[in-house]
Length: 120
Length: 107
Image (cartoon, rainbow over all chains, first blue to last red; front, side, top):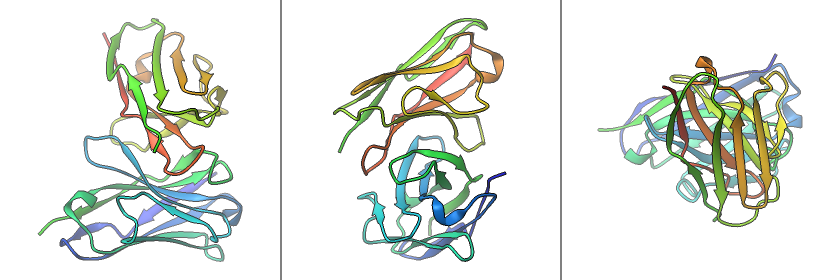
């Protein structure tokens, strides 16, 4: 059974940094692209970033480009999101999601989400 | 970027009713479309991918259709457990884009 568990969220001041992690199990991690999607409380879903199974290809939403970095450690089945220069508008629940296979295949499993709050 | 527009934004229907949600892409996306269901306090759950392929384990009352720019999600007989927000998402290219969501309630 696929399990995705996010960690690393919390309260951070504007301009600060935070690193999210997602521990994956129940599937061959390196064979699947992985993504981060966020949701502002009470609002809709916003894609943040995606990384290929090998880690060689990454893409970012314009809203986080240059500030966030997605990475993965296939030896540890772990996905990460390094978030720098955080802004109030980055406040959201962040979900780790497994794709069906490639970057262009949609997400079939999601973690429970982790709250990131950017506030002074 | 391709925009995804869902309608209606909310609907209220009776148990047993047929419910249809539409999603329109601002440019063609072939069939690179997924539908998700999100219940309060929970993560989204994939219902349909490739516009019309029902994910294993999803009740057969859910169906999807469409290609190009116009897509629909149909619930053939609405059940109380279907109360949720439904999102479409295009994934043919980055950025992935979600529709704004359709809230489904029981009348």
